[in-house]
Image (cartoon, rainbow, N blue to C red; front, top):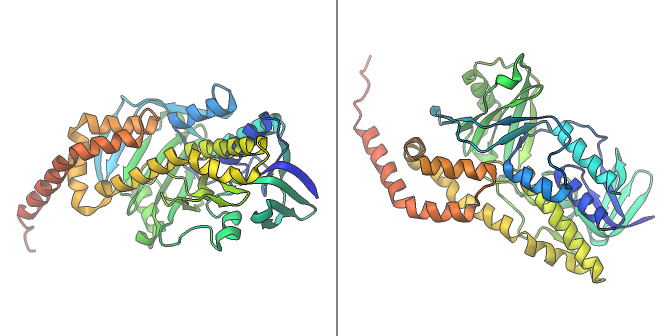
Length: 394
């Protein structure tokens, strides 16, 4: 049996952030993943200002060693209506997970983590922080599982990795483009029920997808076909699918010496769909909790330390879930569309949120102040719709 201070399971952004943090603190770290890198991963690939800020804090570099496009304008649409193209957007970065994750994993290995990628995991024992591979067994004082939304570690802990009634789901295609640098960044609220669509330019083409709450979208493929038709694109590219933890986070992200990070802990924003930033930060916080617990000779305290560190992220997701009905409930849709078009403050709040320049606590406070006006807008829009003349009978 190989012995480590920390085992990190999953070498995506959360796992690499955990591994680089623990390794730089002098801990012996094993970084396990079933894939060899680079590998493909379903993800819009939006790397927000918040993600960039966390990356610089954790990895100590100006930007990831991966190709990126920078956008300072975005077109917003909602429920089939164009809300406008806005150029006052703080910088948004577009990247491919294939190259991004490879760069982050390599940084973790360069920091001293042991490369255990391309390994077949045959058993996970969360109670003892032990992972059995096809050729050997690894154990540690702390296991950090950043092994995705379908986390085998969460399945070992709870019997299932997520709540099927509340999980989200996304479909995505990669479209080639002769001029990807000219492609506009576009976000469509309502392209799926309680979800959105995205058209993100990349250095190698365009990433187009739709995602939303699975229980409200019995035919997500039809949503994707409609969205592609709306964009004037053929439905002729391979489709990738992935569950999406749409704000349904685990309040206790682990048990005993095992901590869950990133998608495995359900840390995805239910409005913006952002997951990379929370994965990076939760990976860092999980590793720091392990560092502090082991320094005190009390590995059992890693989980409570980690839970305390996650409070700001949990609060942000909870606040986002409270606001989400104002975007997606039919009663409020017309009011939201009108408010987004007419209120520069509302647009700026959302754009600053994407950029990581504001947090949900501030957005929630402003939403409460605006709520009576928002309700009046919704009522007014509903009355106008009810009073519109009926179409002539053929």
